Length: 235
Image 1 (cartoon, helix red, strand yellow):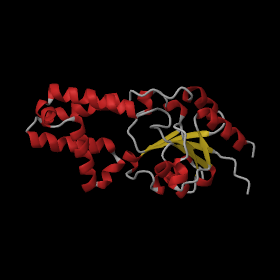
Image 2: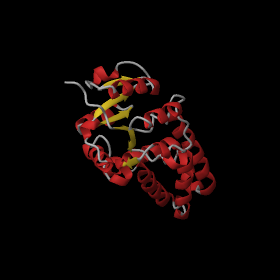
Image 3: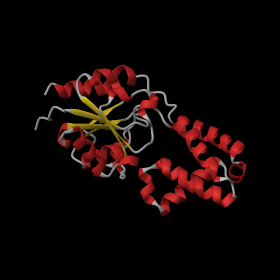
C-alpha cells in the first residue's frame, strides 16, 4: 500500500534538534558551584554524581516523576536540603539557575537551514519528555504546537501523549510523522500510537536491528529528513 502523504511532522528535541549531553554536563558543574556558594552544606555533602544518584533513587519510589524531570530535580533537592539542614529558601534560586543553563543549547548545524523548508511543506509540532523552553532557545516560531510530558502528565513512549498532540493539532495519527533519536521512546512510542516514525540516527550504526525496532525511515541528519519528506509529499 502506498504511504499516505503526511500532514504534520512532530519532533523530539534533545539529541534530535541539538546535542544535550554536553549541555547537561556543563549545567551540572555550574549548578554544583552555585550550590557551593549559596547552599554549602548540600554541596559539601553531595557530589554531582551523588545528587544524580539521589534523583534516580527517588524515581524508583516515585516513577510518575519521569514525566517531569524538573520536578524530580526539585523534590530530590528538597530532600537533601532537609537532610543537611540547609536553608530551603535557596531552592528556587538553584532551580532557576539550572533552568537557564539547561536551555543554553546549540542546534545541530543542519537544523536551522532545514526547519523553515519543512515548515513550508508541513505543519510542525513538538512532543518532548524534557524541559527545554523553545521560546528561550529561539525556535518556537517554527512550531505551531508543543506538548511536554511535564504539562501533560504522561511521558513517551505512552501512546497517550502522541495522541493528545495529534488531537490538539487536528491531525489523525496516520497522517502524522514523528522524528526522534530514541528507538524505544520515539520510534516505538510513535508507532504504537499509529504515527509513522523517523529514527534520527546521527551516530550511525544499526542499533535498531539489535533492538528489534523497524523505523519507517532512518536519517543521519536534517538534510536526509528533508529529502525523505519531499519524497513523501510526492505521493
